[in-house]
Length: 103
Image (cartoon, rainbow, N blue to C red; front, side):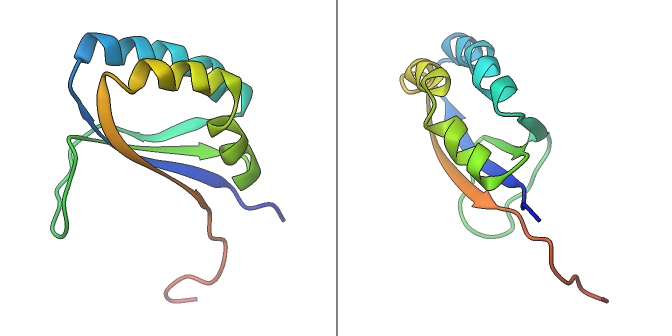
């Protein structure tokens, strides 16, 4: 069974208008690779470690799709818009589908 893939993004935006251009531009890549936002901003607290002002979790149908999206020409075009607008961290990670607490 193929495990889902995820992007975990933590971002500090320095240019809100330009960042909104990035948001519009990334739709092409995300649509092409079957992405779905699970977390897109919202309230949060950081009980440990350091935080950035925005948090995003994007689900993909597979880890391979998540990696391919990041390295695609469509996302490269969007990323070129984001880089001068924000500073952030992105982790691409494979989902877990094993035993859970209480199982």
